[in-house]
View 1 (cartoon, rainbow, N blue to C red):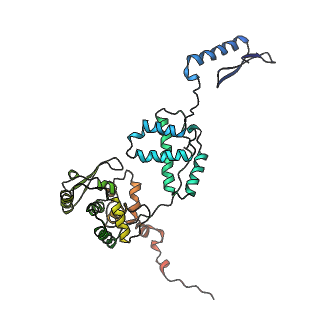
View 2: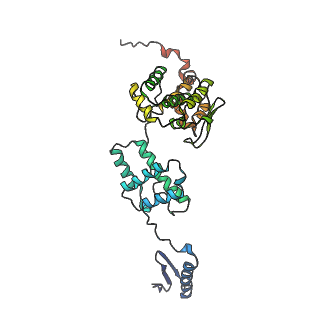
View 3: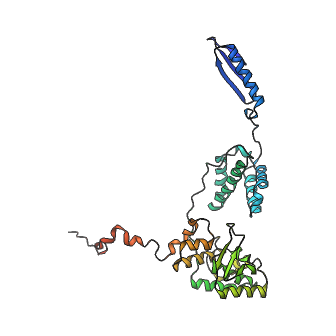
Amino acid sequence: MAIQQTDDGRWKVDVEPIKGKRFRKTFKTKGEAQRFEATCRAKVIDKPDWTPKPRDRRRLLELIGRWRLLHGHALSDIHRTELVLNRMAREMGNPVASQLTGATYTAYRAARLASGTSGKTVNNQLGYLCSVFNVLRQLGEIDYENPLASVKPLKLQERELTYLSDAHIDQLFRAIQDHCRTPHTYMVATICLATGCRWGEAQALRPERVRDGHVLFVNTKGKRRRSVPIDQALHDRIHQHFQEHGLFTNCRDSFDYAVNMSGLKLPAGQKSHVLRHTFASHFMMNGGNILTLQKVLGHASLNMTMRYAHLAPDYLKDVITLGPIRGFRHFYAAQTCDRT
């Protein structure tokens, strides 16, 4: 039916020039109805935006491939991220990406958690997948919104950051001396402890980046260079090490072995970071400034650095001097209870 007269004498237009684009309207005269029908057909031809696009039937793996080509290739950890994304897509059955729903993903997430995957890992994976959709939407590669936008990351209990006492530091470095065959492990660990840098940042140092009493870290996690001062003795020792042993080699496994042999009990995932946490913790306990620590550690947000704020000697001491109980000393007196 295109144009049809109704029982009350009016003219009803019901036209579908192309599949998926339907127009309906009622007019007083047949001429108006005919003109409306002709206009609808003409606009579908003249204006491409009137013509509905075919539904995007690409599956998730194909979309991840497009994301890698258009954006992911510029990321420093693209190979690891792509492996994680591809595994997720396969484990979810490689669905049509536009038909992926929050319910489908959360069911997959629940299965991952039940299999022993940590909450932090599944939160990271959600972030990777959301980034794929968001980036492709921004680039105009897809015409629909991120289907996982309504899925919230899991709320996780904040982990305690372990740091080493002076005695534990001595215990660890003795283990490095006794059990590590490569001389680089001791030097890299020393740089991490002295500057709070990440293990990979110290391991990537070259002689030209240690000069004038400073260590220059490049290719960092935050993509920003930063310079950290060191004392002259360490400055000279680093250059002496390069002259005697050459550039640092990959000695992360050697350090992990030394930690195991030292007998220190560290939380999962904090072996190589324990020296960074130890630097930050001792820095704050010795009265360091939280903003200075942020710059030294290279945190983009102060929120990350605030994890160490509670270690400052005067942290929240105003609770004692400014709280309402300060003027009522009798609260501290021993209380007796008359039972007669």
